[in-house]
Image 1 (cartoon, rainbow, N blue to C red):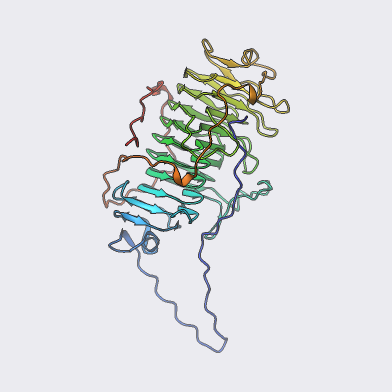
Image 2: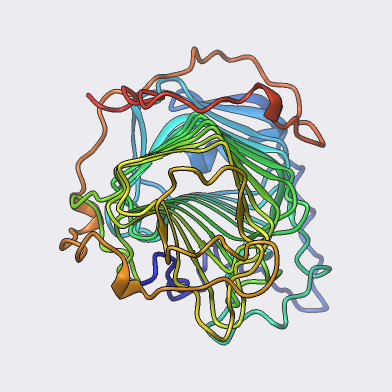
Amino acid sequence: MSAVRPAATLLAVLLGATWLGGCSSADEDPEPAAPAAERSEVVRVPEDAPTLGEALESVAEDGLVLVGPGTYPEQVLVEVPGVTIRGTDRNAVVITGEGRRTSGIVVIADGVTVENLTVTSTTLYGVLFTGVHEGRDVLTPGQDGYESFDPERFPPLERFRIDHVTATNNGLYGIYAFNTRHGMIVDSWASGSADSGIYVGQCRECDTVVAGNVTARNAVGFENANASDSLSIVGNRFSDNRVGMTLTSNYQEAFVPQRGNLVAGNVITDNSEARSPTQADGGWGIGIGVGGGQDNRLVRNLVAGNPRAGVLLDSVEDVPSTGNTLEGNAFRGNGVDLANTSDALAPATGNCVADAAGLSLLPLDLLDRCGAGDQPAATGADLPGGQAPAGMSFLEVPLPGELPSLDATDDVPVPLPATIIHPDLGTITVPPASLLADVGRG
């Protein structure tokens, strides 16, 4: 049984309104164009505009939409470059899909920040940042794959920030960054996602940092599909999911294979949570699943209490897991610490551990040929830990308790930077099991 599932069925989501222009005969004088409405640097909801959607129609580029406490049954499309959407209270500003709208906040403009609010109960995405859209229509690849993807037609969304966002009980993804670069997902919470709590996909030279987040009670806590080269996943807690995190190559998106992530200083523990949606491929009890991932560095993480495997290497179709290195990680109480279940058609090669002393392996000779040749593999049936428990509806997954909120002001922030400062690996140590353990626990 693989911990890394094929992508969920991908959908095209129509978010844009249909705009019908007026028409006139050749004999009629056209109506003079109405003057463009002046946009405001700061728009307050509900004082200046009753909804987020209406606020975005009147806010200036690089401006601020400041959202007061309340429940907002909206699906919000953000196409104003540089705007910040800021809740005044993370726990009291709630955007809800009511279990029937596809999305909460969808961003298609560069330089946008979403911070200090909650997005819940959508059927697909809580918060989505994406560079794949035609006008206001947000698209995802079709089921036949993504071989025809044209990077010139769909340039990546540049510069984004997701900060102190709570994403709960969303049908597929809590926080989703797709075809994006130069971004940060920090100090956020995701739970109750039937696919993954936080997802970063389809980017080269991603220049993205995922840090200080907590995911719990998701099918997968954090997922990467084809996001490569400069993605740092540092200082997070991916615990009490079915699968803690995955690094995956996926032909349903562009830029196969996935490669070159830094995964450091994270707590990835106890991923066997029954109060979560069922994972699509049945994955359960896995800390880190590497499915066709290549040249990733797993450094000084705490990987513990995962009943099937702490780290599982696997192949995806014809894409092998190769060149991944483990350095200075702490493994405790996993069913097996490191396992390989790759298919013989795409065998694992070159996956090495800097110090394997005391590490439990499946097969036992897994690391005998880490420097050259195909590495031996077991099967999913050989993994300990038993079968996955039955899941529950994403709408029924228990909510977190009170979460830390920013001290929100009406100050308009400076524009986001063109590049991201990544954490200094030299300062990162194996974290204690208590890292972020009290966040969202009531």
